[in-house]
Image 1 (tube, rainbow, N blue to C red):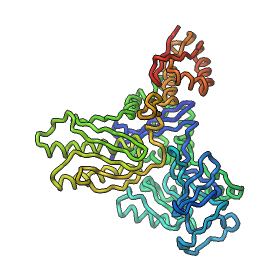
Image 2: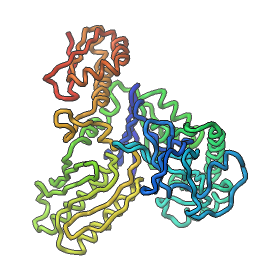
Image 3: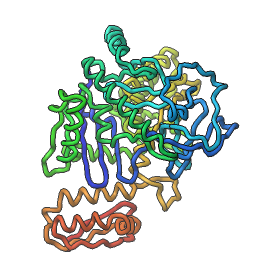
Image 4: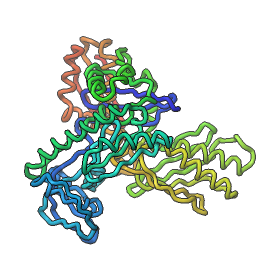
Amino acid sequence: MTRKDIIVSTSELETRIAVMEEGNFVEFFLERADQTSLVGNVYKGKVLNLMSGLKAAFVNIGIEKNGFLPLNEIPFEDFSELFESEIEMEHEYRPEEIKLKENQEIIVQVTKDSYSMKGPRITSYISIPGRYVVLLINAKNIGISRKIRQRRVREMLFRSTKHFKPAGMGLIIRTAAARAKPDEIRREVEVLKREWEKTIEKAKNPAPMLIYQEPDALIKSVRDIFNTDVRNMIVDSAPAYNKIISYLGKVSPRMRSRVKLYTEARPIFEKYSVEEKLRAILERKVWLPSGGHIVIDQTEALVTIDVNTGKSSKEKQAEKLALSTNLEALKEIVRQLRLRDIGGLVIVDLIDLSKRENIDRMLREFKTMIREDKARYRVGAISEFGLLEFTRERSRSSVTSSLSESCPACKGRGRVISRPSAFGYIERWFKTNGQNIRGKMVELQASPRLADFISLNHADSIANIARTYNLILRIRAESAFNEGEFKVAVM
């Protein structure tokens, strides 16, 4: 069993969550106050127009960009009738009976955030997730996580949950339920059902409006990944710690002892060597233990990954060297996809192999490797040119796009650290070193774009830093500095 640790770093501006497996950095979640994900939110929207060619509709959900609703994401049951009647509808509809009209009000849920010029992708198949189950509003079946593989456990869960499944609704049994007591699962189902009833009450108001909001990244991480495989969840903020303990007290009191409050002066990400590994996310080239490397390039349409033997000399025979490097690369590719949260179409240019059994082995092992990833994959065959094509589910912007931005010097052909991320480093620098410069006159020198960004967007945060450490603090733009570069000079 893989042992995990979750490291949580919080500040006024952002929450950063790192997942470690056996000491390896495998997943990263970032939430900023001004960049909150909409995935999971439920809205009452209004249909603006129908696009017959796209077999989709655009729906106004009350945000800047309209939601994109494929017609096959509309359940047979018409939600509008639920506003006026509580009668359960048993009629089985056929796809051709789905009727959608302009200006019609409809309940939808965001499944993918806005990306580039595209608005959020939405569905009318609504699901309300909990720690042990997901309540399916438009289904009546019971599904069980594929990661619960023991047949006896699956049968036991199915038998116990079918007795308290709400009428007219369905359930998905999550992996964490395998170690939960039936009463814990039953209580959660009741809580989720009451949550949905409150949501329907809100939906009686006119569209567009938000009627159900997903919790923040902190609680979502506890709900979705803080299971019995996790040894410790270490949090550097007392309010965040108390928030987690309060949530676990309602859903899983047994897990509270695994949550630890970090109180050392040294930043928590530095203590656990996460900060250095986090910077490496922005690198194109990733070295492999054998001396080979992979190169990751992300474009608008797809992600390409090139595998190279590099300095590897592990094997003298070409076929064995190619096979061992490819397998090592595929393992690292799966880790990088999770870590960077890369989605969409991915094409891997593997080192050519001549033996069919070696090619088949690579594909089998790759399919085994991706089982630990929560995102869904569709994997194709390895082509005669040594290309492996697959898709990975994407629900939000990649970590790379959150931590970096298009370089103004090369008109978007390269990327530099984003200004919000750079300011995060500045904030953490003062948190680490502020006591050593208390009462001093300090000059924060930064690249011109970063200096302007701080002055326009974070003047209150800078003033708060100055008050906290009794500083006379001024900002100066340095044209010689690279994008995102800064220096703190004590006068």
